[in-house]
Amino acid sequence: MKMLRSFIMFLRALVSIFSLAPAAEQAGYLNQVFVLAGSTAMVAGTGAKLLGCDNASYERLCALLEITQFGDTYVNKMGGLKDSSVSVSGNLYTGDTTGQDVLIPGNTVFIGLFPSGPSVASVQIKALVENFNTSFDVTGKQTFTCSLKGIAAPVTLPARA
Image: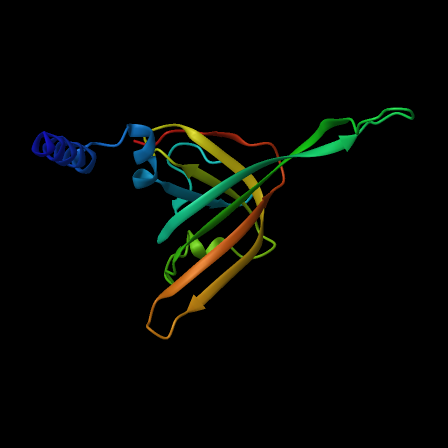
């Protein structure tokens, strides 16, 4: 009986090791970020892949407005204006003239996120580059981080071939 239990535990361990993750969990492996300087949204074929980018996050926000009236016993709120922000980071590529080099603080860009790969339409945000930080580790690794603040409603980013 003990041997049977051990064998079952062994089989469960094997199944968990060799199980394939669902497709939704694999989206990060396909993640690509595209950027286009200026105030014209990307269409299929415009914009440049942000080289070296290995992490991207997209935050959608809403300002909460207090609408409590005199005599209410709880604070009442409603949703107000929407906002968005994007953060990207990765390895620094000093020759990426159409990608990392256009992420200059104060510049207006369209930043497009393809979390499931460029063959699936996604979202792009017109944004102001808030900051672009570089790090030069003593071991030789050179990295960047960049924060962008949305300045208009997100729009569709067409799929790429």
